[in-house]
Length: 32
Image (cartoon, rainbow, N blue to C red):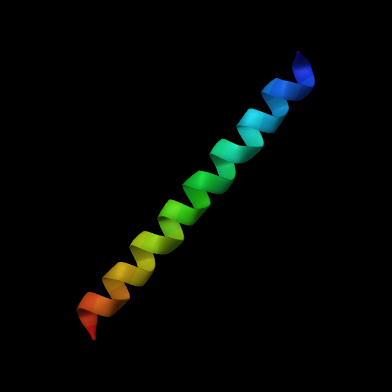
């Protein structure tokens, strides 16, 4: 049970990072 929860948290963190990076890239594209 605990391992599954940790795994889900890890995925959520990774997804947040990807969204943040994607947002930064989009902003850079608009700026230039």
